[in-house]
Amino acid sequence: MVITRCTIFEPPAGELEKRKNECGIPFWPHGFVRAECDIETLLQSWNNEYACLGYGAHLYEELKAFCELTGIKAIAL
Image (cartoon, rainbow, N blue to C red; front, side, top):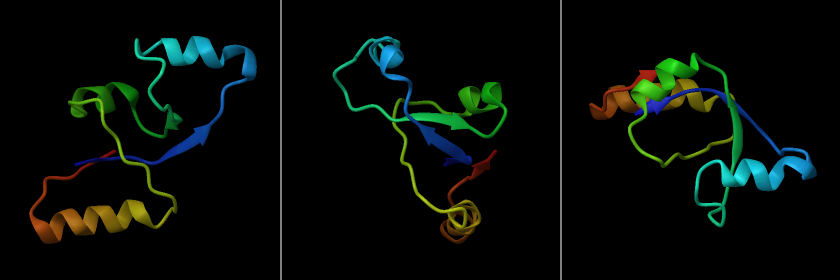
């Protein structure tokens, strides 16, 4: 499990369509985030197009602890 902190933002109205088109599938729901980690390490570690966002600063440490308890390899960035 790749775990990182991030912030969610909404692009300015004039940029929204351009940003949605960047992925090649503009009709899918989008969440725009700024990852608070080394982006190259994140891209090397994250091997699919899915993500789950959780709200709350406490989740970072709790997800790491969950992975340790369940034997899931955590990549905490």
